[in-house]
Image (cartoon, rainbow, N blue to C red; front, top):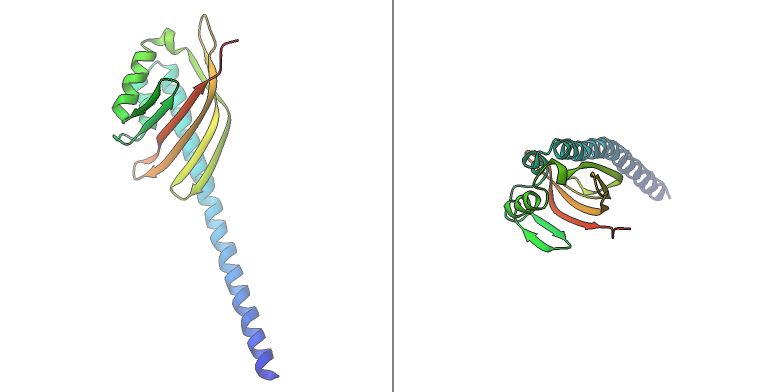
Length: 159
């Protein structure tokens, strides 16, 4: 009987120790998660600021500079950072074409410490139209910070 009580006490002590470590670990993850979300938001803010200055090169700093970077849109699939840059330059050749960019309804879903999925809406205010749509961004953390590795953007039909 004493053996069973002692064994039960050991099990309870172990369970409490594991739970305590789990709580401490989750506190660290919560803080790390909040930091990651803030860093991802900072990338998106920097992108909108660059776009609104008509600085496509600075806008592209939010993307992973790799041949593996993907952009998926109505025109198909583009592979590689350079191809994405060329698409933006071709589609938005000047400030007038670029308009004023805002994002809304952003959701950041951390998949793990180094990967996140971001969904949201984009809105462009231009002189003669106001295109908008939705996007899904696959972010990864690199030594230089969070970067978009895949972008799937779809424009809403014009009213």
